[in-house]
Length: 373
Image 1: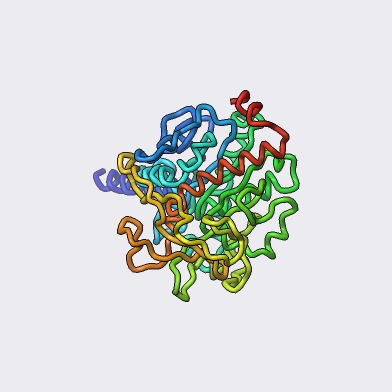
Image 2: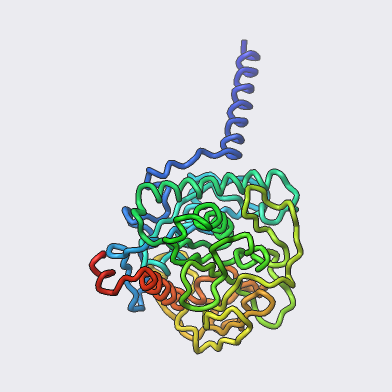
């Protein structure tokens, strides 16, 4: 009898473990009608509502007449298992929150901020060899969540308002697909103010931009409906980030079928200090304010001017290493994590400018815009 009980318990244990593993491989889908699946939303207090304490910036979401749909980068940092992250993993959600603090807050002076939690792919997914069916599967699952969140936003929240698509790193991959599926060559393009897709989006070769009908790379500070992108990397080195050397971008539902070496390609990039798309050098005097990367709102305080210069060289935004310790990257010249922080005030100012030009193109005066608030 005891032996039978042991065997029965052993079988139950195996079944429970299988279910647990399956739950990890195929985490539950989010329901975007529930606020808990939004890392940032105008109807909740969240980490997109802050501004640096020692600044004159204001969170103006309550009166904003435009929206930003922001897609966070990889915060599931596993290097051992290619999968989609669970949405109830506190460590992932906490990282997502402080990344939003550092990045998505740049938009709250002009836009309401919507940022979905989604079943992101883990970090190792980017490092696997290109021809990997599982990588395609998990990427498509992550994008399916982003798409579902965006569709919910359009149906229940947008109401014809101007839209900015924004993201970083993995979020920029998904943002590109949103642009292709929902905006390019479609009526919704008329609502697109701009797409700030930093990090890997800057690996888009200009020749691949030919896949778009309407959306073009930004080449000035005030263009509307443009793709804005860059990768931050130290000057003087010959190394390139892996996401620049190898083309991981797909605008369809297959990832990694072609592992194209593109480090000598021309890219859809722009310099956030002078808003030029060529190799014109921009001195640090044009850097009107950077913020340190912080993990707590109480540390989100200072705006530092003239932190670094910038110059586009072969598709990479080359910068001088900042002297300030809080902007140091140890043992690396890759400033990918600081793509927003280093140019925080410049981006914030540029968002307001592009939105102003958007309304000018629509033939609306400042007074009319004010009446709509």
